[in-house]
Length: 256
Image (cartoon, rainbow, N blue to C red; front, side, top):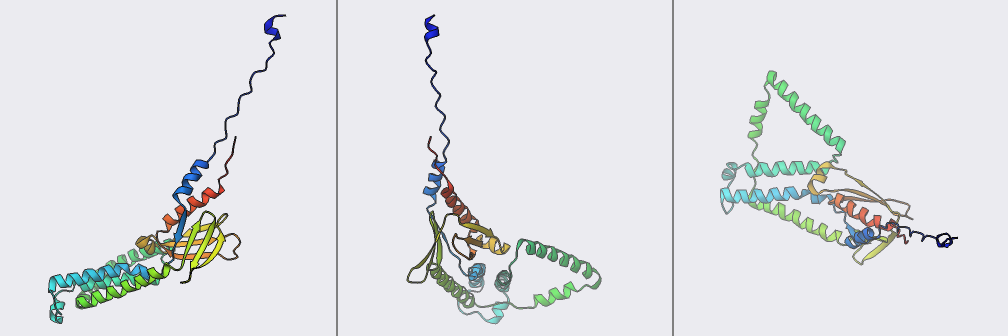
């Protein structure tokens, strides 16, 4: 028998390739997002366009009329600032008064288009638009720079009070816990963050356009009720950060 026949050494068993582990991705997410702070301020913050319009109107009057207290006759000649402030304030209050969801926003745009088309068609026979325009042009909307500045200052003080309030009443999401900080003494309520369910809702299209605001609904494990947070600024960015952080909790590391 030859030497080749006597050589019965078994071939080495190949080592299985290690199972890919998502641990580096999870570690990267954990390093980038350690916690997410969620604040739910009052709807008054959506009045900031009116504050801007009031400041612009005040500067406009000061530039065109000059310093001091202008008389009514002088203000009558400069109605642009008053109209700017009035239209901005009216639209701003409309945004606060109603919630324009996607469906209601589309219905509003459609209704506005139909009403405008109807007015144009009816005006061809009745000719009532020009008299209405003449009456509206006779409405004198004007105010002194002091009024505009005091209006803006009052709202800014309210904004500052809201800013201070939400510093003592907010939610914090970490990798392990959902914490509700409230009260001037720092009271804290704790819920487990793993297996927490979350949903995002855009309740008002205009508010979303103003500050990217929306609603977050949190369902912590072990709680018998959902936590609803309205008017959350930049809600889409908050949701992405929370989802990225909570996704790292479900990653399992496999060793070869």
